Amino acid sequence: MNKVDASPVSNDRLVWMRRDIERRFGFAGARYTRVGSVLPGLIAAAITVALFGSFVAIGSNPIVDMFIRRGWTPPVIVFFSVWSMLILWFKRAKLKLQQKTLRLRVMPDQIDFVLSVDRVSEVLHRLYEVCDDPKRFVLLHRIEVGLSNARNLSRVVDLGEILRTQSEHDESVMETSFNLIRGLVWAIPILGFIGTVSGLSIAIGGFGRVLSQTEDPSKLIGALQGVTGGLATAFETTLLALMAALLVQMTMTFQKKQEEEFLDECTEYCQREVLSRIAHSDAGDVTTETKPQPAAAGSIQDDESGFAPVEVIQEGEADAVVIDGPIVSE
Image (cartoon, rainbow, N blue to C red; front, side, top):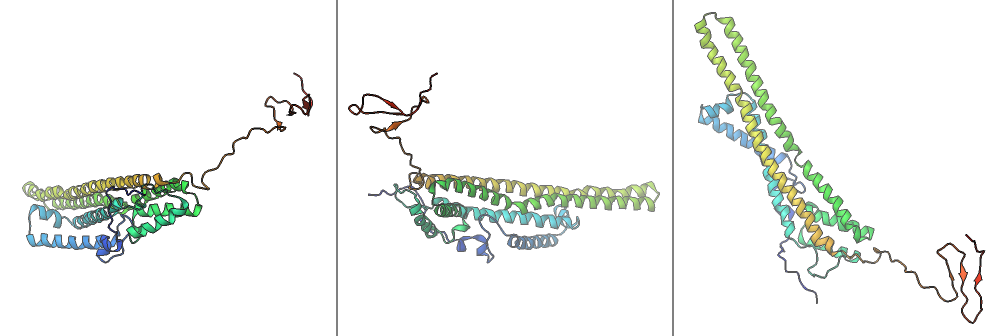
């Protein structure tokens, strides 16, 4: 009688079409933890417009002035920062959905179940029982690819190598999913430097106009106060950009760490739930070695010392040993 494994797992069927966060907003969802750029970009643009609209309504104060009176760079910095944070938030939601697959049971419940070529189809059928589309999930797609190739090759023992190759591909997909955020993190400080250079050029131009318009020292000092004030505020754009880039970079680092840990958990799951069930003695996977049989009576035996083969005559048939070849003396 087969025993049922009592380890805690989830029997809920994962329906990607209903649970993916991008699908909930009516957009085509990307695979795994990838996030499309359109939906977060639209939301970021709306948030940026609403934020700067509220700044205008608040009126002038030191904090508001740093955003609305420093040229065009602060709005772009805010837009890029919010865009990046929204992508990371979407990735976090997608990762939580992917982590649910670690609680699923894709193998039959019998403890003594052995995975062989004949039973691969049974496991593949079970994948579609626990979710609607395995290729949308990192873990389930990895198992599906491995089992499908093992079935086509008729060699279950090669499943470990196939899963290892698919694992490397999943890591590459995870790395590329952060490319847009890396680009935005690079662009945010550059925008801050552009704003600073622009402010410096305006301040230096104003300093030149002051010198050309007056020669009275008292008037010159009063005019220069406005110029030096412009120099101080010119660096606020760099300060804003560096703070925003730091926030996005740290959030991205934590998110990437969680995704790397998830991939490690997928590898452990495959080792524990799939590879440990392989039938290593499955027919066609193990080469049978033929053991040497003892020589029968009257057979010809090869002398390991290099002498010619000798035919052994049983007692009663002859009183001598017949040598088929010449004996070479040392």
